[in-house]
Figure 1 (tube, rainbow, N blue to C red):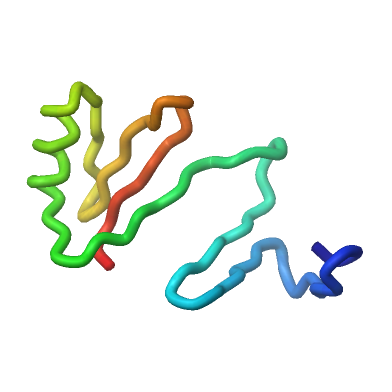
Figure 2 (tube, rainbow, N blue to C red; figure 1 turned 180 degrees about the vertical axis):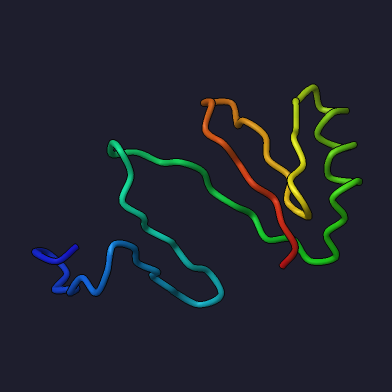
Length: 81
């Protein structure tokens, strides 16, 4: 990002925004994608869990967030917009 886009590091993590979306970058043990998140308007965690289970997935709930593995095994988070 620094070499090709001219972005300067200001810490060990970074947030990039565009329109209503954003991307958080954190230093990890190895390169890769930890998880991604969909922000949903009128989000109901209990309803999300029920729908994911009905689709044959195994969601887990942490506070108001719900996580599940996508078809490639990458963790997906759904949360309130």
